[in-house]
Amino acid sequence: MFTTTSTSVSAYFVDDRDSRIQYDPAWKLLGSEGDFQLTSQASQAQGDSLTFQFEGKSISFYGGVTSTTVTASISIDGGPPTLWVPPPAANLTNHLIFYSGDLTPGIHTLVVTATNDQPVSADYFLVTPNAPGTSSSALGSSASSSASPSSIGPNSTAHSNSPNVAPIGTIVSVVVALGIGLPLILGVSLFVCRFMRRRVEGQQRSHLAQSRVFSFSPPSVERQGRGGMILSNKLMRAMEMAGQRHVTTVPSASTSRATLTGTTGQQREIHGAPPPVYEE
Image (cartoon, rainbow, N blue to C red; front, side, top):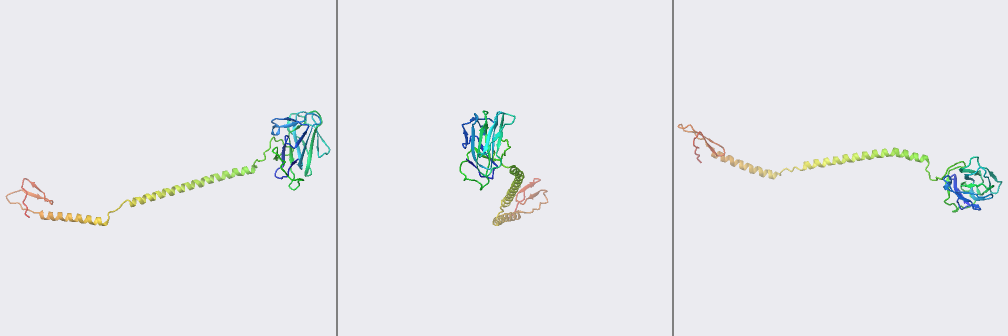
């Protein structure tokens, strides 16, 4: 028995290969790209039937149409059967064969019987789950991988289930958030980078200026004092020697020669006159 109790999905897929579907006798396994999960079952003779017990409030039965003369008898819970007659067009897949309508919440049994020798195709079933608290039995681990949630209704023609598709509103919200957030993040990052770069450059200029100021080391006062004293002593000695050696001589009347005496004590002869004699 297939049990469902959920309000988060509108229907559950049950594939034709689900072990809870009983084919009596065994139906022929077929497959095409148009079939759900690429497989389907087909009756082989008149009187072949399938039985599917489920828990839910409605069920839809889908299959293919390969003949315009095929017919089937379908009943729910042993009630009056419904005769199914195919549409005028053949070679259809994913075709709605039967819809139960609203059922009382609980356990139900669907029986499909071929009424002639034309093959009846069974592809998948959609079971609408019971509301919470209306299950007639405890849920177990009966749901298999072939039963999957779907939002497809009775008149849908989807070929596969997609239970994890994100809502369009969520996708749009994410795109808008990224469109607004990324430029803002980039702008803040650029501002921080420029601020840090200017700060580092300012610190470098400050360190450079300080290194230039402290690179000049003036001589100490003691050195200046000693140097000044040494220079003063030398200058005074030179001046004293120059004063002692400086002599002004008056030339005699009989000569027209003159002598030039420098402050350094050196003498030069001018116009061939001999240098004067100094007296100390």
